[in-house]
Length: 343
Length: 266
Image 1 (cartoon, one colour):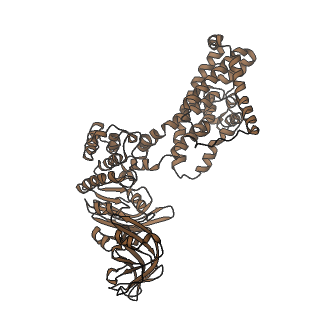
Image 2 (cartoon, each protein chain N blue to C red):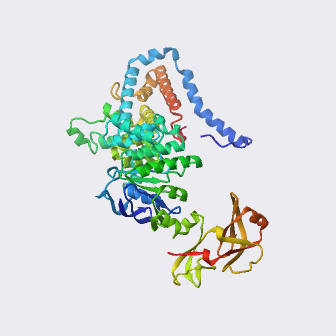
Image 3 (cartoon, rainbow over the protein chains, first blue to last red):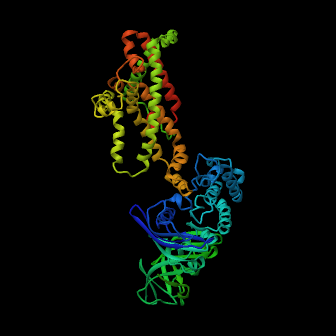
């Protein structure tokens, strides 16, 4: 699968080149409004698009959606409410002229494979969110499409259902010969499901690489923060980064001055103090505590310094620092813990 | 839909009095009609010749008008709701015109279009028939006034349908016609039924356009409302009986469609 498209939705245009091998799962991530759903709609032929889309060596970009053979699972599944789970699943086969009995048999097979075979006679209103999502998946996959587009397939599910469906999704998508593109908001989903990650921001691809690459060196503050890292956008200069919103940071390894860059640091490497610290840390920031959230035995603390920083400390030291009392705290960060990524 | 729990307010007299007067105004005439209807003689009155002919004619013409409205109106509703054709807003406005137009004006307009001396009169005469003053004229007049009810009800339903259902069907390989028949139509089915109910009631009750365009020829174009009007002079008890029948039909329609009608009509 190889696509290079400009998709328009109203006055917004998404330009993206995206490719994937058969059997590969590509996670499409990015903040709200980045154009993820619009790109999927363009691929499916549901939104006006210019450019090329090649699938199994065939150019599809001029074809209407019904002639593309691309599976699309819209947000929240959206089963046909007037058809049973079985008839929903058989819909595509029937549209392709498969005889009723054959279509139902194949549909039943797929429902079994996704663990909802016993619900074949139910109407969508009688299915739980997780069950409906499995049926929607069966409906998209039953015709053996070469490309499957999934728009936040785990978005509407509660946590435990999410784990279940994610596991099923992983099994089914990796076993399939289809290229799958999964839009997700959740880094856990991306890491669990995908081989490749494409980061979309403001209608353009910001990063495209293996999941390991993207998570190790995120080029987007959005992804970095999603993965739990501090991320500051700015310009390389001095002995580190001039942060766009004010302030500066020192890093051990610098970039040529003037380069647009992202500075990254794990919250665990930020230390907090009530008194001005002595010693060697190169980055010393001061600010009020904005928020302290417990995460198991650790506490995540957001400090309104310039630039703002998030620290992660043990519950014991959080108590010792009397964070609940408010007032300014000092945050320190070694230059060796700050990593610069050129944008 | 249930209203949010409102805190009780005292009912102001200045609103209660006109409100009650409105109810009286609506209910009193209907009550009078029911009181004066000769219930015991109803079967005999309805079996009398002009009445029987009118009943039979109205049944046939109103159902034909309903069928025409569905066959033409549902596709139009879909076009208005789902396409970006130029002039869509204009057509939608046009569709609502028969709702507010005095029916007699509709009849005059039909006459000027399809009458013997109308715009298309010579063309129709060449084919050997003109609809004016025939049963086809009755059906045409009824369709003219009934169609908007169907189009507007169905258009609202189609517009309220999440287009992603139809788009999903398309990605599964269904062409536009198949999508319409297997997804759109079943999903707006209840609204088509509601719109059909309204359209049929309107066709059944049609008076002004019919008498202008098709006349009031017993057995050919004299529908129930026209018969009622004439019987009011010739045979008042029969007119009351027929009126009661029409009222009963209307009430039955309203009750059976209550859950399906748009909010305004509920």
